[in-house]
Image (cartoon, rainbow, N blue to C red; front, side, top):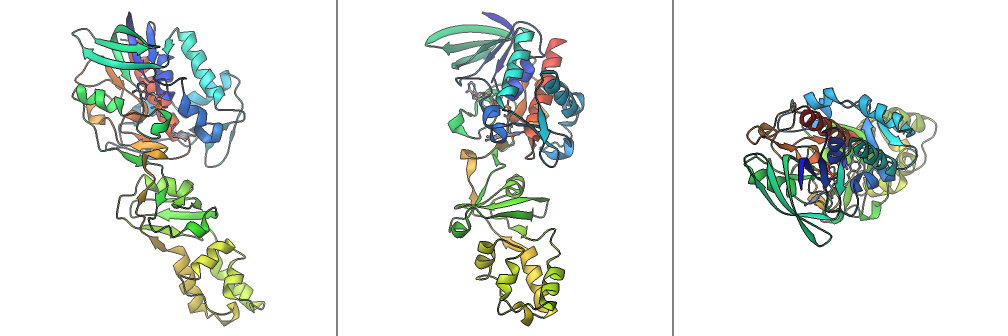
Length: 392
Ligand code: FAD
């Protein structure tokens, strides 16, 4: 069977590409259904984009690479598409847009768009062999126990990254890219909880509060969640993409709380209770109890001098922790790194030295922050490749 374009991976990027890349298109996926990560995303409501999405929200060895695709298919284009399909949505916080109903609506929308474009979809299909010819590519695939020989002019790598192998993530895009001589930058788990091998936060598991997480490169103000294994929550997931083994992270537990003034006021109006009790009016009680074993908090609030309160505030706003690792690909939302952008055209996503070979989505070394940015990259890069293929 001969196709103009074969897309490997029926995820966010692959389906978007299939909707735009013209005729005689086949999308292949080894999963039982298309868009499995979309289905589980955003707690089942899919945080499908972010109103603030721009190049500054992405990590890549070449921070300029994502600019062209993001500018040519923006968050507003996707919001428009969602609107045309009658999908109701809402903004949660920080520009993050979610479906009012279910993430399955986004999958159905993409399937409808693919159907409208005439693209075929083969799920439960494994790629057994892949070769380049003078005019394109030849694939040997297995579908429902039957082998099929396929050929195509354009081959799009859209099989995503390595995160959550249980959901079918594989490194196939990297293997194929390597096979054709494309570079791969170091890959690592990102948007992932940080762990502490001594289990020091076990007793705090479930405690959550607004915090500022920072290192020497960046800083995020969002919720922090203590877990049995360490730290999670949006601020931690965000910082994890910028964290490396051995590095210390700084935790500000009172980023927006004028705690010094609050405690001084409480002291003036009595303050005869234990400092820990007074502090627990502003911070989770279990956290205060834990901290009291690590930061000096003796006596009653009434006994504290301004200098002692200042020392306490300094300790609470600059708690330094050195995680032992991350939860890895098992729970990571994305993979940092991937197919080297130097190997690709930023306008078309086509490999510079392999005409007809394209790479899009998470497989490429472009990784978004938490908050709908990764899907926006999938839509934008999928559209860029699709539009380029349609016009070639
Ligand atoms: P994927 O969506 O991962 O698609 C890749 C496809 O390729 C899959 O269908 C897979 O089955 C297929 N495939 C893989 N290997 C093979 C193979 N060897 N043969 C055949 N097929 C193969 N991002 C957001 O922006 N907002 C969110 O709300 C959000 N929530 C998330 C929640 C979770 C739990 C996770 C894990 C991720 C979340 N993300 C979110 C990240 C987002 O899902 C990904 O960045 C995005 O799906 C990447 O799109 P993609 O098309 O490149 O890859």
